[in-house]
Image (cartoon, rainbow, N blue to C red):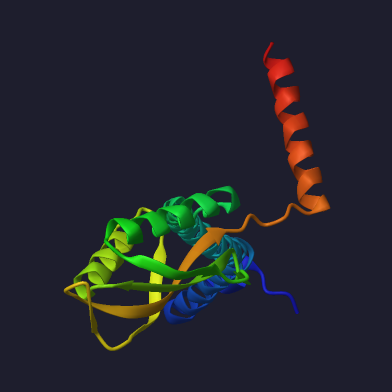
Length: 214
């Protein structure tokens, strides 16, 4: 049996209010289901997308900060390497350096009994060049020689120092001193075929850029 508007009008006031309340609740439920819920879900998706993009951005910012830090560290290491390379003679300078060491000994009043370069000892990016030295002279002369060697621009380490018993010679106390003087030379890393190709490719790219600018 269908309910007509007239039937509703004949109902008591409390019942009318109950029906009205039910209708209002139904409207609110329908409004929530078809309007509010889709918008809420859309908002939730957008919020998730925003949070994901924010995390990506923060990660990229961190990478950018770290890149600058590592770039600065790399530049610092390059400068330190250049300074160290300046203190390591190349192969052509070794004979001149050994001659300088010998001259310093003679200037200090020492007589050389032995000055024998030994075979190079290959390391990572450098080679050690040890030289066996045996000299005669006073203790003060030996100390002066070691001091002068230590003041050289190039790195020369004095090790394995041993001194004999002092003896009088021409009114002067002398002793025989043996030591190992070790200098170092920088070893250039050989260029591989792939590195050579890379260098050629970079040169070609630079030439193309210059042509385009013209």
